[in-house]
Length: 271
Image 1 (cartoon, rainbow, N blue to C red):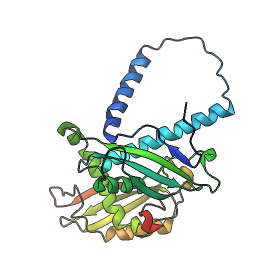
Image 2 (image 1 turned 45 degrees about the vertical axis):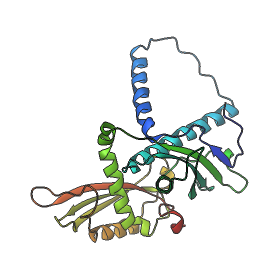
Image 3 (image 1 turned 90 degrees about the vertical axis):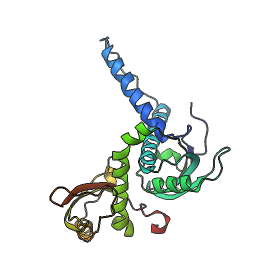
Image 4 (image 1 turned 120 degrees about the horizontal axis):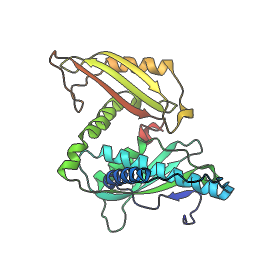
């Protein structure tokens, strides 16, 4: 049973470990496959109709699970430097399900760890979280989510397997800081840049696409002006210093970079 908490302050209950989440997901997949292979047909039973209270509990459970998964995976992808430590992330969300505050506190016996705290706040501001159940908002329409984060050391094999995800996150961050973070949009979505650049990193051609975000499809607004602005910004980029930048045998760099965009993506300076 979930502990009784003030509606304006939600705890994710268990600390989120970005590294352990990998093994947990793999173990869950194996368990499901084994379960399916042993499945035996049985007479269908009429599904029980859940009570309103049970429905609310299930909605909250789904929210917590999705929130943990999004935050844990984003922290995992952002931690290319292999930082270790523990921090409590305090995330404030308003009635429009927009993040308006990301703060950190040291946890337990852990001493202040500035790099881990800064990484966690950056992860918070760059995330798109699921919609908070309406009954969990306070009288002002806000909620604070308390999310403990634990960054554990990784062995060389795991770190090597994470390189593509580290690069994807870093490239998205590189483009975001030079485009949308300068002037955040009023909607939520996913932007994809398909670029062609010379060997010096000067972008020659660029195609930009805007799409709905799976967590917040209703918050997407197709915006021709935004798309045109991003296309122009992209064409003036110098990506020679972007992580993972490389050219082919003809001296041309081709690639695709995607990242989430939100009204809060620039952090407190953009609010």
